[in-house]
Amino acid sequence: MPHYPHCYRELFSVSLPLVFSMAATTVMEFTDRIFLANYTIDAIAAALPAGVATFLILTFFTGVTGYLNVFVAQYTGAGASSRIGPCIWQGIYFSALAAVVLTGMSLLAEPIFRLGGHPPEVQQLESVYFRILCLGGGINVAGTALACFFSGRGQTRPVMVVNVIGMLFNIPLDYALINGVWIFPQMGIRGAGIATVCAWSLIAVLFAGLIFTRDNDRLYGVLSRWRIDPALALRIVRKGVPASLQFTIDVFAFTFFIFAMGRLGKAELAISNIAFSLESIAFMPAVGFSMGLSTLVGQSLGRNDIPAALRFTRQTITVLMAYIFCLDLIFLLAPHPILELFLAAERGTPAYSRLLADGTIVLRTMAVFIAFDALYFTFIGVLKGAGDTRFIMWSIGVVTLLMMIVPLTVIIAYLQGGLLVCWITLTLYVISLCLVSFWRFRQGRWKGIRVI
Image (cartoon, rainbow, N blue to C red; front, side, top):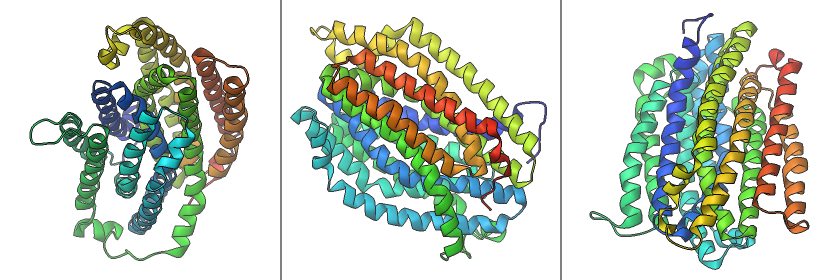
């Protein structure tokens, strides 16, 4: 790949397609929430807890297969392309194992959501949605592994195209299965889950068709080097599991927060669900740029070019802060029109004014933490691109316990804190994550770490 030392072209060429890929995922989730919010209030109240709980479990597996991105990037930078095929195959075998575990997890849906203490009608819908997503989760894990063949080499446009196709397939199918239009039965939240799994399947099939060709086999060994490589698999697990657990712990904290909001009441849960659906507009692009940065840092370190890695980091911070500034203006100055998209079913009811008022406060609080969240993902992207994953895992675990789990438990169980206090606690947690990751980045130990 050519280098552009004085401009943003290389960063954008790698990261923007990943951002659009994340945006496609975000649009799928966003439209899903809107369809369910306008179906029933119970459906939207159930969708995010069940979706986040599934995401929490999936992130462990997709985190490991997604870390193949760094292996592929460093092999690319080092000129060892023949090692890329075996990397992808280890991810496929790991995906098969993940499918077995996720199938077992689907059987635990009802006990899991009983612990949440949500209203019985919401629990029932949560269990249905969770079960369907777990049964199809192995396909999503495999799709993540296959995508790394492209993203790790900096060829991210195929990733974008495939995910956009998946989105365009999902949205009409989702609407049809939820509401029962055309030839489809009305299935509510069950239909939303089925549509998501169908989209995952299409994405995985498209990636497989693009990867497993004779030309790619000659260059990368994608067909001939399919056997299990114990040494490579162990190295992937040793680096990928800590990286995965970092993201899993992060998602667990937000899952814990969502379940805690359910204990405050149905209105608080619904408002928080809506806020997180909107937050994904900031979260997914931040993840996309973080993945792109990991690729560029990995390739730079593969060829021992540390100044390039630092340059890409500065550029990523600049781009994400500009984007977050625009979002913050909307959340701070025009929260009502956004919230009304989700509250159409409640318009004219006694609860509508309260939902709108509480939602406005939450969105304005959220405007603060999404800025720190974007910085956090930037520094984490650098550390992951180098392979500094053990520190990430342990530090994020400690911060999550001390700044989220313990304080939120005390606030709700003993201090009877309300919605705003809980959201301020969440914001302080994200700020802490940002500070810890920045400190590790400034130490500079990542500059001497490699995964290959």
